[in-house]
Length: 425
Ligand code: ACO
Image (cartoon, rainbow, N blue to C red; front, side, top):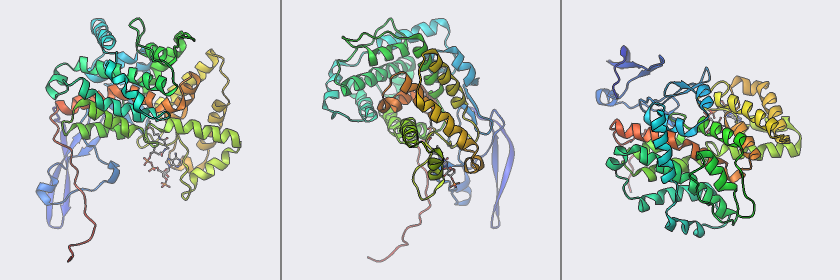
């Protein structure tokens, strides 16, 4: 990746030593002090726990302005991408850097179709998991196992045929997710169909049954595309950082994606949408919103207002704005009356006028409303994080591809040792 935007220098003075550090300017004018040679020049390292202030890489995939609530994939605002209404086109955009032409789109759909079947031998694996196992645990294990069934995962084969590798992962993980669900409820699995599009196919594999045929409703297929587009990438979040870090050791793509999946399962990351529903149900049962806000503000109470706050957004999450609107529309179109939506509106209103949340710039994030939509379209709560993972796959693959393509050295941070000094036995 060619980075030639060194317009200024920062001067760092340590004792009598003074060194100049280049300042790099990003496309949107953000500035970064390049410290890559600091240790070599001075013997010092920098310390920044949890990377609150560190850009770990250069990237051309996604731009976020957390202060203004801006999100763009490959330069295109998220609001415009949602209007496209096609998750697979957005997946293509993220991985390849441009939207597909009609011919590329047709080829990509074909690849998705021919790669959608799970290796028959892998089906038996699902029987070994205990009933009630969380589908995220099942899925990350199964993705890891893919390398054994599809062994052409060396870097050369993958990056030479990135369209096929991308399509296989995106398509097969969707099939696995639906199989995991069917197994968990003891129903026969439903095979993918080549006459259905990506999201419709997933809905059909989830909900069709020999005794209860399922018809894909266009409103539901549309909102699933919207949700998947909104979740498709979010630059260097925890799971993407896991993907880049693990991938830098040149681990195979499947194991790398499985690591991202594990990171996503945490309640502070992708697990939050499930927690939001649990929290809204508790609040609805209790009826006292201010009691829960009080608990969220109490530092001695581990309770947090789930679906609120974000490391990067210090204003309303643009994805939450879109999904809140879509959620309201869907409920009207399908005549759904879910008391939890009203509770969510009231909690949001109460938090946004509360000094604690105002001072800390805590706004709803995407997870605050996404769970309500999944709930409304029949997705069980333990599948919410799986839905997030399916949507995030193209982002993970795009970052993996970019990381490999820029010949990233193995990721290996330094530390500052503060343990015991050398002592006698
Ligand atoms: N409820 C109550 N207080 C909160 C919340 C919350 N949801 N979020 C942040 N705060 C408080 C913190 O306690 C801290 O207070 P302090 O300054 O008095 O110590 C302050 O706001 C700053 O928060 P941090 O913890 O520094 O924020 P951080 O960037 O580390 O964490 C996170 C971000 C994990 C998203 C956090 O806001 C949180 O836990 N939210 C709830 C979980 C959630 O919704 N996760 C989904 C994230 S979006 C996604 O992954 C798609």
